[in-house]
Structures are given as C-alpha cells and as structure tokens.
Image (tube, rainbow, N blue to C red):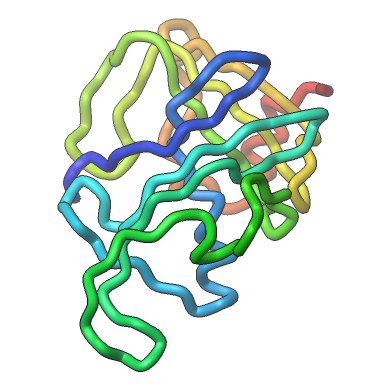
Length: 165
C-alpha cells in the first residue's frame, strides 16, 4: 500500500501528523463510505483534529463521495456538513484507542500506510474522546519499542509506556 496522507492533530499548540484514523469507528458504525480519490488516500478523506481541555475534537473534514443517497453517481467533494450539519467542531466521543503522532526526522521510510519510523512518536490514549494518558517515545534511543501499531493486540503494550496526563 502506498504511504498515506496523514490527518493532522493540534495538541498543546503544535500541529502533528496523525498516523491513526479516529473517524473510522464513526464511519463504520454509520456505514458511511468515502471514495478513494488517489492511492495516497485510500480512506477517501482528510481531516483535522484537536485536543482541547483534554478532549478530542474533529475540527475539519474534506472527503469525496461517489454516489448520492439514491445510489446515483455524482463524484462530489464534501465537508463537515456532510457528517455533522451545522457543526464546525465535534467531540469524538465514539473514539477509544491510541493516537500515534510521529514527528521529527524520518529514520526509516516505509512505502506502506503509516509504517515509516520517525525520530519521536507521541502516543495519546483516548477513551470515549477523553485523553487519559500521554507518552513520547524517542525511536533513536528506545530500540525495543514496537513502532508498528498493527502489532499491538490491545492496549496492554501501550500501558508499558503509559504516563499520567
């Protein structure tokens, strides 16, 4: 798979590349599909997020749909109103998991998904939209750390690195 366009997350005043897709549980629950407009964005949308007062918010969305509600082909660009009419910021209370925010220089480029390894990675543990823990890993020093989140069977691996917010 081609390396994917990352979403962005503003945390403590800094914009990070987000190597997690916190909108996916919402889309799955509501059976919403976007159209993959290029191989670097198989999910069919890009979004912006923020952590404010310890809560995760969706703040922007740009996506593509290929059919309307009647199944007619339309290939149309849509925004936040498509999912959340009249809202410019939405609490992501549907999301529980670990957000991965790689940053710094790329140590190892991997042309697949979000697998590239960066100097540092910030991990935020989110439960129902609330940030419960934060940990930063320095991949130039912590060689035993598993960088690929797909290898984590559950949050127990994250808990080894958990610190209080």
